[in-house]
Image (cartoon, rainbow, N blue to C red; front, side):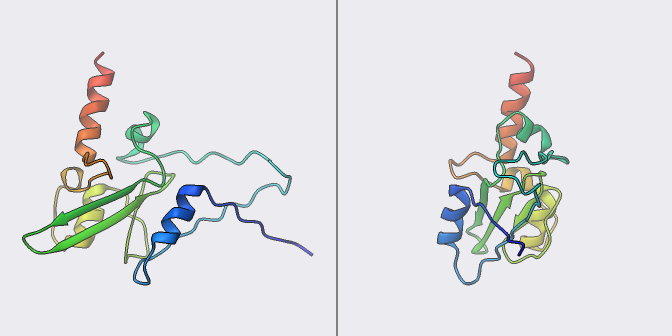
Length: 136
């Protein structure tokens, strides 16, 4: 009888443990060759976040948030391995930070300056860091 074995990284388990009943949880299943420890095909980031991910400044599974106190609005997104953003409450991933932010705010907005990592850096801060690294 065929079996399905799912391995979760510790960061994913921690995220699932913190999820509330209102959170949308997205899982991606990759089918392997069936051998223990078989190498899987790596996911290659594409799109606007790809350079940050390839430079190891942004990782798959990173949680991005924002808070707009004036309108008491919050947003939360998770970076996928292919460089998209999964926004809580939305069924499909977004290809860019600005598209993801607009889905939450309902207005066109610069997602590069709106989304923050847990350490407070914005995606724009990461872009500036990458630009400095390239010029060194």
